[in-house]
Image 1: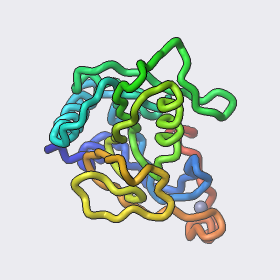
Image 2: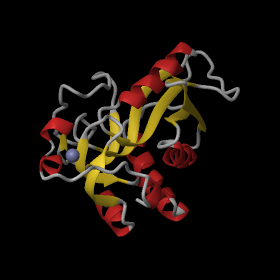
Image 3: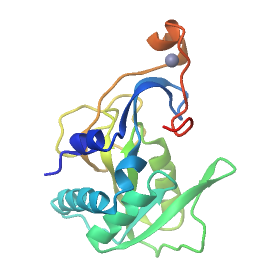
Length: 203
Ligand code: ZN
C-alpha cells in the first residue's frame, strides 16, 4: 500500500501557509498535486495502487473522465492502470463541458477521477455532463479525500457540504483532513496576514 501522505510530503506537495482556495475559503494547508505528479514514475505507482483498490470492488469501468486541469494527470495514469480509455471535461465560460470530439456510447460505465476530492463540486459537474451524453457514472476516485466526503474503506462520515451522490462509491488512497475557514472566521486573517492563491508566487 502506498503512503500517499508521505509521498506528498516528500515532494513538497503538502504546503503550509495561508491559502485562498478556489471555493473562496482559507486554509493553513494546500495540496499541490502537480508537484507529486510531475514524476511519471510516482504518478504510475499512485495510479496502480488506486486501480488495485478500485478492482477489489468489482465494478465494471469502460472509461475514466476527469475535470481539467487538476484531474488530467492522475486520471490518465489511472485509465492506463485500469486498461481503459480516458477523456476529460473542461470549463468554458464557467461551465464544465466535454469537448474535443470525445464521445461516450450509451450505457458505458464511467469512473470520474480528480486529484483531490474536497466537496466534490467539480467532479459532480463532470458526472452530470457524462450522464447527459448517455454514460453511466459508476463512481468517483481521487488520490486523496479531504474528509468532507466518505471514501470506501474509511469510517469518516460525510459532511453536509459533500456534493457527491451517496449511492456511488468514492475511492481514494487516504484522507487528508485539515480545517478550512470562511474569510470572516479565518484566524490567520485575524492576525492581519493576507492569503495567497496557490499556483501564484511560485507555490
Ligand atoms: Zn485567511
